[in-house]
Image 1: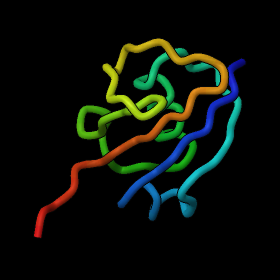
Image 2: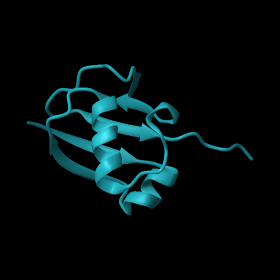
Image 3: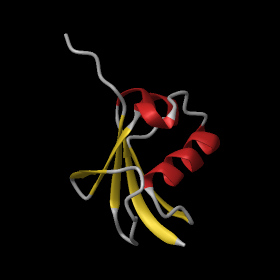
Image 4: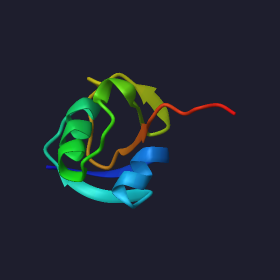
Length: 80
């Protein structure tokens, strides 16, 4: 298991009810982690609409997650 800090923005933060949480997971990629969280928390956005950043850098959905990483999921945002 890997321990990660996960941050949520916009609609994901609203749906989760938290801006940040620390959790243990068996997910090894941002895509797998998002799908796990989507199932657990009922996120309505499909994975292909969400970008992931790990330790302040945008990464591919298949990047490797490591213990202690900070993962941020960023949904599309509307300009105004």
